Image (tube, rainbow, N blue to C red; front, top):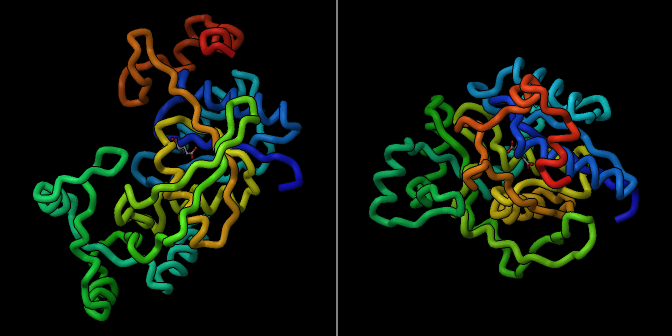
Length: 283
Ligand code: GLU
């Protein structure tokens, strides 16, 4: 691959950071140091409702308290919508995407008859809009009817197997993992409200930022198959991947921002030190 290793920590500013984020941020920084590379911070704020600038500021402050500083400029996804739109339009122009006008309720109802689930447990899209007459679909888009853009998995997937290199937490131990993007069905590549999705933005940005090693939680491992497919379709290089364990709370449950889990700010206010956080995380 050559060049300097580049890693990234990419939180979404829709809440405060908890121990799980601290773990991810710290192992990214530690590995960047061991590899003689650098770790960037990226703010993944494409969700216009859930993302709040105040959370971004708090995230930066929490990371600084942990002793983590990042190179400037920090990439903020909401400022790059035009790039995502153009990547999306390129895929659509090649017939790899189609507009989908189905409401969530309609998808749930249709999926009740064909109860397939994607790796996140959401109903697989039954393909209702895949066969729409292209002229009619274009006209509905032009009229401003709300729609997402879905990957036509049957067209997008190549026949030959492909995959990515996965590495151990220490940066070594590479193994080849075959991608299984079809498990996601016709995934949404561009949402109703913004001209992108987590999947499209993350793949585009990893390439723009020259990311060579992606270190993120096991909860995103299945999504990597989709990301590798998008990289192939967009002609982008694939980084290497490591999916780390998820930090659990005292009762062995996954930490989530939605549940009451100790935020770093709360722990700091209780007098917990960054060193104690590292120790609690086994680092
Ligand atoms: N923004 C994502 C999150 O907060 C992480 C994305 C990634 O690391 O690929 O879960």
